[in-house]
Amino acid sequence: MMMRKAATMAASRRMASSSSSSSLFASATCAPLRSFHASAATLRPSSFDLPDPGHSMWYNNSTEDSSGSAGKKWSPQLTKIVATIGPTSEQLPVLQEVVRAGMSVMRLNFSHATVEEVELRVGNLAQCRGRHSSSTSPQAPNVRATLLDTRGPEIRTGKLRNDDSGHETIKMVAGDTITLHTDATWAEDGSIETDLFINYPSLHKSVAPGMKVLLDDGAVILTVTSIDADKGDVICQIDNSGELRSRAGVNLPGAETDLPAMSEKDKVDIKYGMTKDVDYVAASFIQSAEGVHEIRDYMTQCAEELGWDLSTKPLPLIISKIESVAALNNYNEILEASDGIMVARGDLGVEIPIQQVTNAQKEMVASCNAAGKPVIVATQMLESMAKNPRPTRAEVADVTNAVYDGADAVMLSGETAKGKYPVDTIKMMNEIICSAEQFQLSGSMASPGAPARYEGNNSREAAIAKAAVTAAAERKVAAILVLTSQGTMARMVSAYRPNVPIVTFCPNAKVARQLIVSRGIHPIVGLTGVSQDERPAAAIEEAKAMGFVQTGDEVVVVTMEANEALGNFATMKIASIP
Image (cartoon, rainbow, N blue to C red; front, side, top):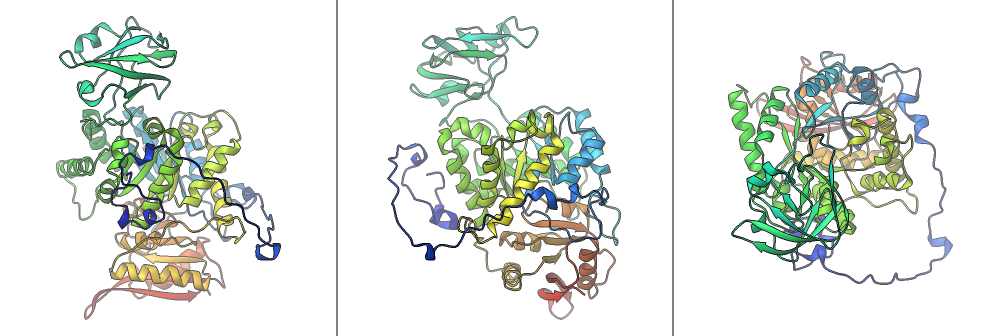
């Protein structure tokens, strides 16, 4: 079963269980829909009040400056946007507009990015302006996090024979036999139509007759017919005709591999990223919790070598990318070991039946909600906007449903990295998020129910966080203000999924950046040097000045305070904005 300890998850209790680890792939008969009739009196009337969200966006208001503040109330979206920055979006003027349009996290794809490109993108992001510094701490003009996405331990075909240009292809013909070799001599000689080199020495141990081998994201599919264990060769039949390029990706659906958690390139990239103070590491092709622990141990070793004091400079948070059957089978353990999850639908859609990707996404998002950990939904969300100024209706529905499911963030890849409309793509995604969140709260007959709820724990932080979110709903407050030193309380409040912004005052930019991926949290660097007694009132004034609240609104204020007699204790207050 995709989640073997599902009994511990609130989300899993809502899912049909199965006793087999292969339930995801089992055949099923679709039952007919149960018909019913209801009188018009029992149904909530449909108003179809569906305004254009673009009209209310700050970036469409010409009176606002580049920081986005104009003294008017600002109601930011709760679901965040992770955007891949590349050749068409890396220059400062464009990147500033990407930030202004709503990007929260900049993704650096280390499968392609060079050191020079990373230096440019990180440097330009630091120069962008945003709403994230209060008047008490003007040294942080912008709080946007950086995510390092590793290439991971990929399996690939070798270079084609005589492919000096790098653009040559070979023709694969359905019904033909082809042999997959792992011997290094084939890497040197080059692959041909009947013989391919694969850079995974244990290939013959990982597959069996009848299993599939997918080349180039499934463009060409092979069926294993026999194995020559002595030579390490795998003989296959070609299922469909197509063309194959050099160094194409290889997927082994359902196979257990012994690939390491990090390639040597990944280790170099992670250590380099730490010198650039990246905030998150998206770990590609994670298969087990042991892989997550291995990466965390390696980052700890790097921190020691770099002379970090982990009490003041935390490690990057690990976002595990779920993109294989092995990762699904070990999902609960991976979730527990990770700081967050990315639903990496690209490779996942090749590894499992593509018809099941949406179901896997929904279960992963629900389980992350129940565990109180952030989850990013990724891959092809607005793919057509790489070339077109408007998305398809299906893409809009895809982003909308990710918001309804409870995703903390949605991600853009090639659309913003190399597409023609990077800024318009961010704006479109922001407006889709806005529409989805407003409709979810509208009470319309068709509006979806709430996502899976955080199960919480017995800590005082969890109790205060739950009380704060409950009070916010009862009083219909404009925002929840959290004063935090390390971010723990803010994450707790976010886990309970309030429907108002969580304006979080942080002591430094690092704490703020590592909070920004979580749903609803809008971190502010500020209130440094303000006394403990004065901090709640100062936070209210700053939130008002920055447009989060206005006169007459109510807010919930959550703090962790220190007292000589009582020690540290949490408080929750409700206040009106003067």
